[in-house]
Image (cartoon, rainbow, N blue to C red; front, side, top):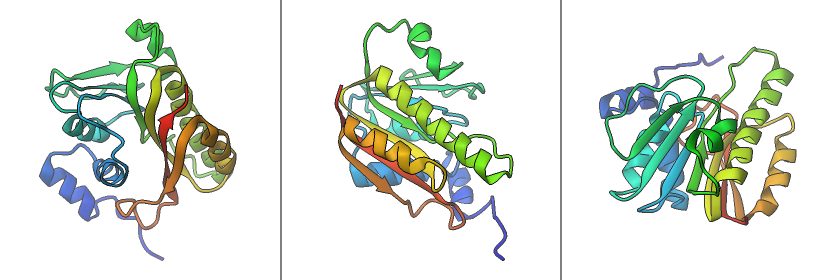
Length: 195
């Protein structure tokens, strides 16, 4: 049986390159394949802690773009004027930001629920995280915007994929090389949101 290695080569690479988590390489891989973030985009990172995806998104938005990151757990500061960090519930984001209309070009989420070890409960919680990210995208994403969210095989994930597909011009499932070999995660990438 292979032992779970939290400190694998990507963990070390992330430390060496100044990323807050090895998950940074997942968003880089998604970006390389699908170009979901463009120069000048406004990006919303839902469930952003510890901030690895936020750091990567900042690399792709250019000087005129910005990244808003929200999580229930406060993020350590990121010294970048293009970045807003919010400790709060993503469901309240329109109230927090005082937004009257969708204003983000991209919504991303690498959010995970705390695992209990009970397979059915963990699968349901994982789908719940993805559904929350999608709900936020429906509220916040501009017409034609892009979406990326982590999901896990099993449970009602197929129902989630089926219900999400009509909301985008194109929906792809992507298993990433940067995911751990032991992980059953994959990513849903929605291109061209139909508001």
